[in-house]
Structures are given as C-alpha cells and as structure tokens.
Length: 261
Image (cartoon, rainbow, N blue to C red; front, side, top):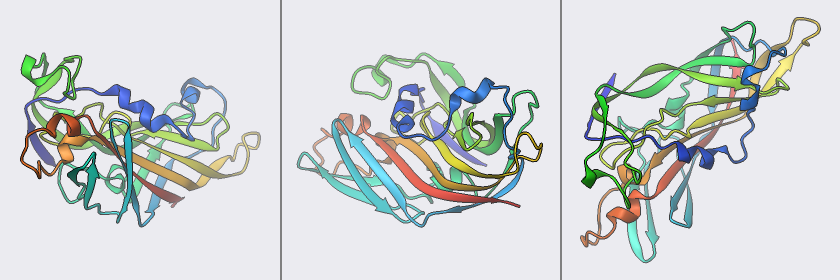
C-alpha cells in the first residue's frame, strides 16, 4: 500500500470532458434491462509498447510518445523550457498499465441490469477530512479556482471497485478509473476523467442464452493528471512559471487487448 501526505486535494470533474471525446463506451446503458454478453471471469491484458502523452497548456497542445514505463518529457512553451517527470516508477504516478493491471477479474453482479460490470483496480482515497481550503490555496490561477472543499490529510492508493458499463449493443464498454481528486501541485492523483474503453469479441447470442465475450480488442486506457504535480521545476529560476504549469493537464494513453481465461 502506498501512502502520500498532501495538504489539499480538490475534485476536478470538468476534466472528464477531455477524455470523453472519441469514447467507445455507452454509459447510457447503465440502467438498460436488455440482455448483455457474459463478461464475467479473469482476463489477461496485453498493453501496447508505447505510451502516448498529451500535455495541454492553455490553448497549446504538445504530443509525445514514451515507453510504457514513462520518463521525462522536456518541451519549450512560449520560449520557456519545461520538464515533466512522467516516470511510472514514481509511487504516486499510476500509469495506464497500473490503472488496469495485467490480470483483472470482471463481475456482473446485478442480474437485472446486465450491462453493469465491476472491476477491482487501484484508486485513491482521502483518509483525512474534506474541509474548506485556505484562501491562499485556492482561487484564480490555482487548481481549485472555485475554492471547493479539499482533502486535508493523508491520501493513499488502495484497491477499490471500479464501475463499468457495457454498451447497449453488447459490443463495447467503458470503465471509469478516476478517483475524482486532483493535486494541488504537491503530489499526483488521477483526475476524474481517467477511463478505459474497448470492444468485446463475442460468441453465441442473447436468444440462445450462450452470449459470451471472450476477447477485448481496440482497447484504450487513459489516465490524467494536473500539470503541477509532474513539473520538474523552474529552470530559469524566475518564479513566473508556477501558474502557467499548474493550469496544465497531462493525459497518458495506451492501447490494450484482452483474453478471457
């Protein structure tokens, strides 16, 4: 279990829109009572050998590729050098291959709502209290512009159940990975929009009662962070980059496939 001390964390639900574009899942099917393929069981997951990274600072977007274990990304924004430490070995950074481990067990517990699924995955939780932040820690130019309540205390990474939805057609899915917390620039926590999408390869049919998923193809898992927590420092020592980088967002993305045992 990994523990991280942090003065304040803030919910950032708006980041979800960043990850929603181009999604394959069908969240609207969560309450559907139509049949869905049987996806229960243990699945072996294979990831691509590259990690695509998108860094957004204001209206500027920078795209880079790394190995699956991450690394250091250096770029120049408006004439200023910046470095982002995206090393997956950092205990507080959960890369896509960690957000969805190499082997997962999927359950469909609600027999009346077969399109709902549960997967156990790493998540973050607040062990302290949700409190009103200090005025100096929120407002314009920070990750908490509206001064929402924050976690004052310890944040840890634990295994928690993640909720997923099988698309109405039974051919796609979406799994919600994010913990709903973002960093204030001290440590890193998954942003609320982190998710995984994919397509089922099925056999049988709903009418025949033997409709079953046995493979996952075209999977994409995305994890997002706020820019400040991955910032290596102020290379010019001018103290003017903090607000710029704190407003940045970083998205990891990698593809995957799966096979049911």
